[in-house]
Picture 1 (cartoon, rainbow, N blue to C red):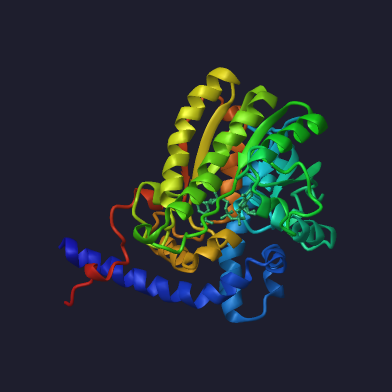
Picture 2 (cartoon, rainbow, N blue to C red):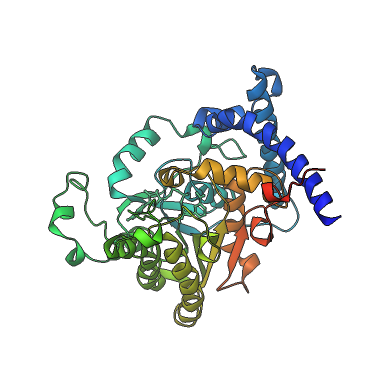
Length: 376
Ligand code: NAD
């Protein structure tokens, strides 16, 4: 009986899978800045049928989101970050979680500064200046999100004394200065005084495509350094320039707790460390600086970093098929939860790993597993 109903689930999942697969190429198109504008267009402007299906799906998400945003900006309970200053590390385009968090925080009225990885800074600034991000900068009142400061940053280095010669003389770093974590914190202090919000939305694992069994010590430690210790370093250095009642958030992934083959190179270990450190930092920074520290465990998103891992489309499809809420995760859904987590509305929440993944983490089986299918 149980197996029979599992078979039904499987069939329904297979049918949905076909529809989803048919929509996928267009879904990829939908991540470009132009396509994200298309989400806002009326359906009459939509031409092809597969694009139509995807646009409907995305537009539904867009509508749901604009409802959420207008709800928080309405006359009831508000995420109100007016007068708050936020520093967000880990934005280099308009596709990732960092950008979506910036957007949600800006929507709630916060002033935003960015820390952009030095090798990605030029292209980010040029794209911004050329208006490439204008569509995705648009806020619900029609204005464009602005950044008070954009700092070069490399979260792997705490001070210039830590920077090896080959990085200091690397042409991708030429022309930039004050980009170590302590120097960025000092620049933020000089430019903005005390700040309220610190966001860590960055990760890097040079051997991420290698299974843990094949990961070198160097690759493993590099993943931990860039993706986990960087949070400790930021809390150490930004904590003293944060206002009491401030909040720190980071981004994690459930590969910390569950085996996700393909998320290798020590990145699973790095996320486990990040989550553990979130709890310890919540206590230590809570006592020392009176700030809160939380992390968001996000579902799969086709960001630039995720594409480098190589199997993100499979993970998005898997998540779509198996999550309690069957839809593709939109980055702004993570942004909205981040806005809540850094707002006074969550003043008693700290040391927490908050899942924003359409509920995938609570599933005990994959409903689309072939093994659930039994011939009649
Ligand atoms: P992303 O590419 O938008 O963001 C990663 C950022 O890290 C980039 O801007 C990159 O320039 C920056 N970065 C890399 N090394 C750096 C360094 N040494 N110093 C400073 N910045 C550096 O991709 P994303 O997926 O939005 O990633 C943001 C966070 O979300 C990461 O922590 C990631 O692990 C996490 N996350 C992503 C997914 C997903 O499916 N995309 C799921 C769960 C969690």
